[in-house]
Amino acid sequence: MRIVAFPHRGIAYNDAFYAALEQQGVEVVTGEWAGRWLLHSLQPGDIVHIHWPSFLYISHGGYLLVLRRFCRFLFLLLLARWRAGALWWTAHNLLPHERCVLPALDVLARQVVIRLSQRILVHGAEAEAILCARFPAVAGKCVRIPHGNWIDHYPPAPDKTSARAELGLAPGAYVYLQFGQCKPYKNLEGLIEAFARYQAEDAVLLIAGSFADKGYLAQIGDMAAKDTRVRLDARYLPDELLVRYLSACDVVCMPYREILTSGTAMLALSLGRPVLSVNRGFLHEVITPEVGLLVEPGDQAALVAALAQVRTRRWDEATILAEARRYTFADAAAICLKAAQWRPGRPLATGVARHEDG
Image (tube, rainbow, N blue to C red):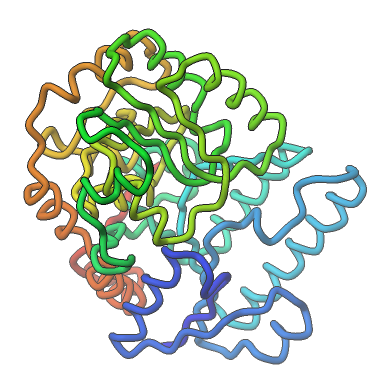
């Protein structure tokens, strides 16, 4: 079994997932999205595995450029499918968070990928249901795999006292953290607005991460400047600094507008931190009452109440870590191996989920 990955390395999820597959004897090859490479390097029996289709076509720029590059994407996708014979897609999100200038192309890309794919990997039953509701053609192709935890994948975490001292945070503050790439779908403005309505003097909201959109950075910066309890660190976070922020906080906040799967939530759990987020997708199954609180997307009153409620709970770090350990990349790899051996008409292997209808 040989998997040709797009991409293979450079993203934490892919690094961990493919390492787990390699440990189980699977050969993983770094793919190159170019016609000559696909034609000469792919072999019959390969599995071409893509994660984010929108990474493979240019979604910004002039309409003619976008259309030309999208046609190239479709041609190369058909070429890859023809040469290898098998195409898999991991559905990390329903549609790209950063939409194409011609949004219909994002939908078309999903539809084509789904039609050509033999297997579609999803992180749980709720994510599968959302995907099936939007794209009924996934029926019969979905394979549920866990999103593995990040325990021991990152540098050792300092204790909370040391982390707060390094970041200049008061030892007695109650610290809410939002971290990672700061994009509009993460609803940072909604979080700041809710925090402004939550008038606890000892509360601190940390927003840490890089902004690709300068306009969004300006908007969030202006909002943060109006509340002295809000601190904005708008930069890329290397692993050591990321772990320091997580060690310093009391809860990770993720009041997203939309969500299918979340590596951010799993990272928070992997460092023993509770999660405050929305009752959608992957989070609906993973964030149990023992490890966090969920609110409905867009319900600002519920978010304000949750900011207060979360600090009344006694969160147990050992319990949170135990929950995170239930989800491993080794299990995900094992399920994928079984899925690769399944053929229509044969009983489904354990861990492989199908829909009988749309």
